[in-house]
Length: 152
Image (cartoon, rainbow, N blue to C red; front, side, top):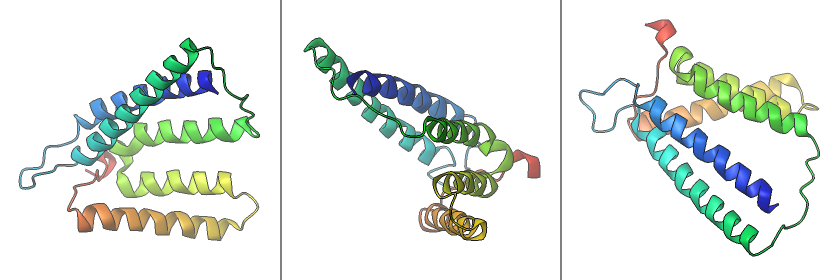
């Protein structure tokens, strides 16, 4: 468990760095205090902080000789698929835009997590979640979310 935490912390730290640097390429908002890069960068910084804490705790526990319980992943293919979906989400967000990318990402995750449920219900869940997140960030916080370079 300790070694798994260490590896997870390092991977998440690398992802947070990538997200932060990628957000630097987002367009700068002229009439808003917080541009489209603001929220991804805040999330990346938060993820980086939590990752560093996890890494430091893991190193401390390894030095003390703790190994922790063995982790058993019941479905490693599911874990890898979710990780791949997350990487793809980050890579295509700028091109396809927030709404399409987020819907496809959430639809993939919901279908992966609930394969026994009807496809239509899974797609409705993904659509509702996408619209809710969009409403919160674009409506409530007035964040400028990526529209997608494919549509420009």
